[in-house]
Length: 258
Image (cartoon, rainbow, N blue to C red; front, side, top):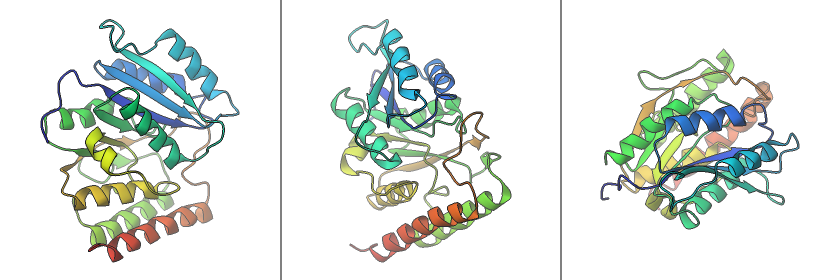
């Protein structure tokens, strides 16, 4: 693929549900970190805590204006009233970013501030420098770590990711990252599949198999500052999600020649 134009729009998709305590800080830190032209696109599943209202106010104050050089960084909101779910929210944001705003680099991340917004430019830069087509923030390479979760969660994540590397390949070390940047061409080819975090395993595996250039950038996963974690609240919750991850890995391995 050719080098991305320096004036290409970067869009960060933020899928939200009940993140009123984090969303303002996250957006402000993203806007301060990523160079224009830049769009923060929030896809909110009609949060009962009013997350979408906070974003709507911010978007009204800082709209994205692609033809105005002084206002070519901004905020936009998609409020979903009928649909729910992490994967479909990210996919909706990707579709809006590409087809409505013509973004050429799309990133996404969790909205609990566990993924430092200041690290987004590192993911974007790997694509701008034509070093990669898909970039994942990684906890499991040198320079990265996870201090947000307890021992049980870290051990299960380590097991799942090593199982994924064993069956799917070692181009990626953090298959469950969820902290992603990619060229729009890749995301037009590969739509997201899955209910929760297994979408990331599927996406990274399929991208690698299609010989897209993969790169990982280390990051430190830190504890959320507000709200309730959606990652897992007890052993049963972790095992339930982990079972989906494992079945996704096995199915991708079984279909490796298809």
